Length: 395
Image (tube, rainbow, N blue to C red; front, side, top):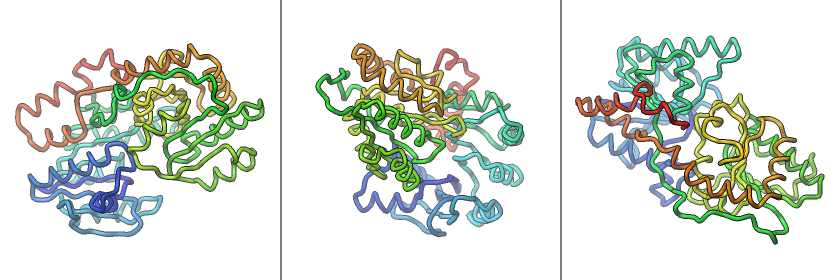
C-alpha cells in the first residue's frame, strides 16, 4: 500500500525539520498531523505528503520515514504538473485535503481509492461558484471517492447543500490540545488604561483584517484607548501601510507567525478575541474560535455562514455583519462597557466549546478507511452525516 496525501499549503518537509530541531508548532494540531502520517507510514509500504505551495520542488525521505514532496508552486497550481507528480509517485491510495477537481478526476480515471479530508465551505450564490460546486459534487459522489470528510458539521452540511451524498460525508475534527478547564472565567478589569484586542490568522483582506483596522480607527476617533495585536502571516506590509493611513500605527502590533503554544496565552491576556472573516473566505470552522473559547476571553466574530449555527449573539459571542467596520467597533465598545455581558460571555465559553466536540478525528478517518475491517467501516458508517447523530448539533 502506497498512500499519498495531497495538500494545498503547509510545507511538510519544513515542519518535520523544525520539529527534529526542537522547534514548536505554528498552528493547531500541526504535530498531531505530522506524527499521525509517520505512524501510518510504519504500517504500509510508504506514506508520502505532497505539498503544492513550497519554496522549491523536492522529493525525499524525511527523518520520520515519510516521503516529503514539494511541488514548488507559488500562489497558483499548475494542474498538469501536479498530476505528473502524483503519477510519478504511483499511489495506491489518496487522501486529498483540498478541493482540487483535477486530482479527484485523475483518481477516478485511474481507479485509485480516495478519500477527502477537507476544511472548506462552499458558497452557492454566484453562478460561477454553483458551476464549480456542481462539478466538484459529481466527482465526490463517484464510488472511487469512498468518504468525503470536512472539518465540522456545518462545513459538512455545506457539502450536502452543493449535492454531495450525505451517506458518504463524515464530519471530522482534531483532538483537543487545550480545554477551557485550564482557565477560570474572566471579568472585565475596571482599572485598565488600555483595552487589548487580538486577531490570530492569515493577514489578508478576505479574513477581515482591513475591517478590523478600520474598526480600531473608529474607536480611537472616540478617544477610546484600545490596542490590537495581529498574529499571523500574509500581506503584512499592506496592512502596516493601512494602519499608517488610518493613523493608528501606534496602537497596532504585528507579531508575525507565533508558536502555536503561545496562541491561547495571547488570547487569555487580551480583553477580546476578534474573528472578522468575510463571507468570501472559504472557512471550514477556524481553530481560533476553539482557542478563544479555551482562553475564556470573550469573542466577537462576523456572521460568516460557517459561524452562525455555532455562535449565538449575546449568548456565547457577539456577532457583527461581515465587512461592517462600524458595527464591529460598536460591539467592541459595547462589550468593553458592559461588565455583566462580558462576564456572561466568558462563563458561556466552556459550554460553547463542549458543543463543538465531535467523535471522528482526522487520523481516525484515514486509519479506519485504510484498515477496511467490518468494525472500522461500521464505525465510519455510524458517524456519517446521514446517521442522524448530528441532527441537533450546531458544530
